[in-house]
Image 1: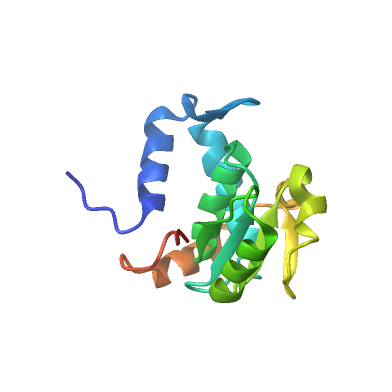
Image 2: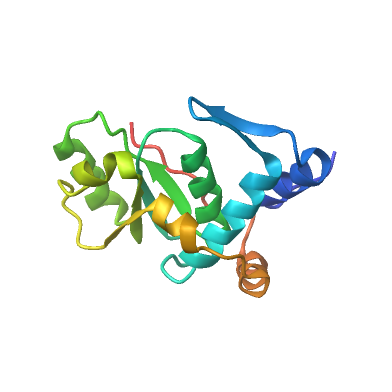
Length: 159
């Protein structure tokens, strides 16, 4: 069994082997491995200007295909993610934000208005808007990948 230094290597291998097969699905439908890989790389390229090596990124949205694209995108950018339960009280989420100190917070159109209630001085970005303009930058992603270690955080869960 091969040793994967980073979860992105597993995604890339899966996309090569199963590119047009469903990788994830939600109530909106399925997304293929190729779709996931392309959008995650594009988001990672874009987010790398805002997210540094081992920076946290908050997610204020429901679990969905678009959230998974964002999660992998954050990892491509060199960061890690933490998902906030949008049904939690805002005061609890604000305490998590205070502890996490995220580089940015990602939300979606559905939760954009509610995200304005968060106490956060940084940027709150709408993932659908990012996907409209994001483009893959192979050189930028290669530099980030070269800095990645197998002990870098991937995800932080606040319980």
